[in-house]
Image 1: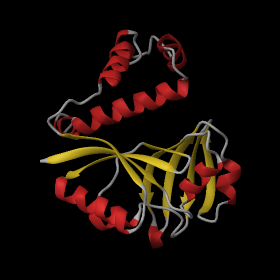
Image 2: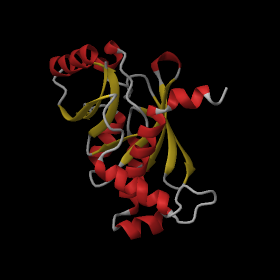
Image 3: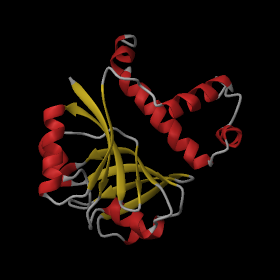
Image 4: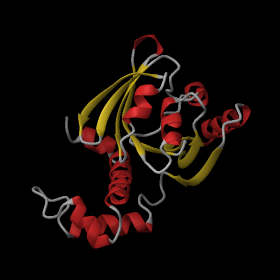
Length: 207
C-alpha cells in the first residue's frame, strides 16, 4: 500500500531556491510549478511574500527572472542550478506542487511505496542531506488534519469557494485571526491534498 509523507529537506549550497531563501530567511518562497527543459535546464513558476528579485538575479544557477504579476514570477534555471535532488531522481519520487521553501528548508508532500521511501531516506543519509520526517499516513487514513478541516469548513461556510466569492482571502484571514500569507499556505495544502486524492475521479468524470 502506498504511503503519503510530509518531509522537510535541507536544500544544499548551490541550489538556487535553497540559497535565495537562506539570504531571505524571514520570507517564504513557493514553487507553484516545476518542469524540466532541454540540456538539463529547468523552469519554475514561483510566488514569494518578500521581494527576492535581487538575490535571484545574482544567483549563478538562475539564467533569467520573469515577472508574471504581483509576487508571482518564473525563473529559468541553468543546468545544475537546482532541480530535484539526486535521491529523488534515482528513486523516481516526485514531490507534489506547490511546495514551500523557508530559510533553506523545503517542505515536500510525497506519495510512494514504503520500500521506495525507505530507499529515498537511505540516499538522503548517504549524501548527508539533512531531513525531518513530519508526518506519514496510509492512503486510507483521513484526508485533512483537524486544523485543515476547521479552515476548510470555515472557508466553505463563509463563501470562499462560491462563484463569485462572498469573502476575500484577506477578510477570511482576519476572521480566522491569521496572517493572509499563512492562510494562503494552509488553503494551498488543503486544495492540493483534495485534488491529489480525487484526481482519478476528476479525470474519469471529465472525459
